[in-house]
Length: 356
Image 1 (tube, helix red, strand yellow):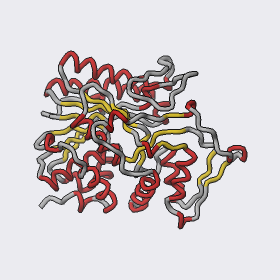
Image 2 (cartoon, one colour; image 1 turned 90 degrees about the vertical axis):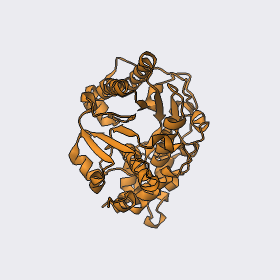
Image 3 (cartoon, rainbow, N blue to C red; image 1 turned 30 degrees about the vertical axis):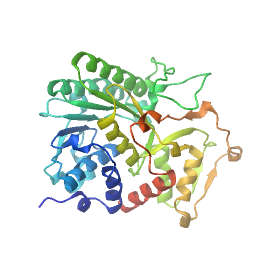
Image 4 (cartoon, helix red, strand yellow; image 1 turned 180 degrees about the horizontal axis):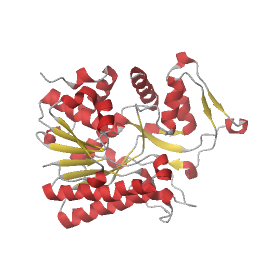
């Protein structure tokens, strides 16, 4: 008998995934469908795949998942015995070299290089994943008349210069220097959205778009994102030391809330209407995010400190340091965030600790 997801992942991960599957959505639309997930080794994609497979376990949904990955070795480390299930198969290739994997009904396009390290060291690979990769996905969708959900980004909004916004709605458009390689990711995502609109218009492909905020959750120790570094500090029983005042004010959303939002847009969203994914309770400064990581485990007696004494003073939150997304449009579909920053930090760190 095939092993169930609850028997193949740690208990805390299982609880996380169950919280997605239990959302009140028209899941039956996915029954007996084949769903391609690009970038399936990513930590958001991992939770999407597990949620779909858990639907099969609980509801006998007959969903077939194809995970597109660049590295079979990394996928084997990430998924383990889950890869032995008949409802999950791997397709090992770069999204820019995507060919025909057979009939698919849905494509969730999450493959991209979203790390600042890649922007600096592989800008060509970064923009190609968003341009060529997205085109390959759309061509496959045309062939099979598949529905597409594309992961865009808050980075598409750009800068609002002398007229900063306290929060960004989907229709807002700021300045991006298209001659700078540093914008390989942001400009690539903008262009990918236009590509989606073009294919939707010309070929009638139903494409839906999400623009996630800063997403956090269980990750690998080598992750260079600031929230991940805070988690590693706590795992290592180290105080968190900031080299700045930690003033940037950003929207953070826990991975399970994010995945629930993705499925909400996929199943309830309008075609070619981008949806921000953010949590009102997750609007927080970097400094307070560090505090939340420390506070999640009071028994460790960790503290937050600053390299420069002048940074100890609480910074003033102004629109100029904001990266806050307005999620009203998403919430109108019936979605709401369920995980607070404190709870999310604790859960993620506990899951990471259990993997050691």
